[in-house]
Image 1: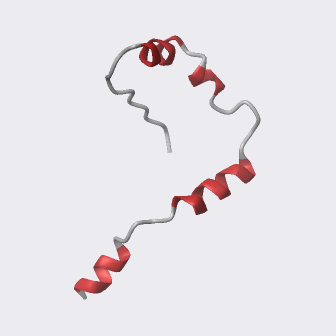
Image 2 (image 1 turned 180 degrees about the vertical axis):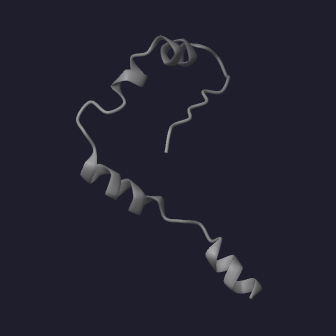
Length: 56
């Protein structure tokens, strides 16, 4: 049972999710973030954390 749990917790291959997301991606997705003042300020700063959260 312990080994079954470990298998279930094993690292997921992110390429599956990435490939799936690419098929439904809209052009320009994320541009609002990359051109936003908060992001640009963070990008120019040294260190720090950029925390993003979304609605599911």
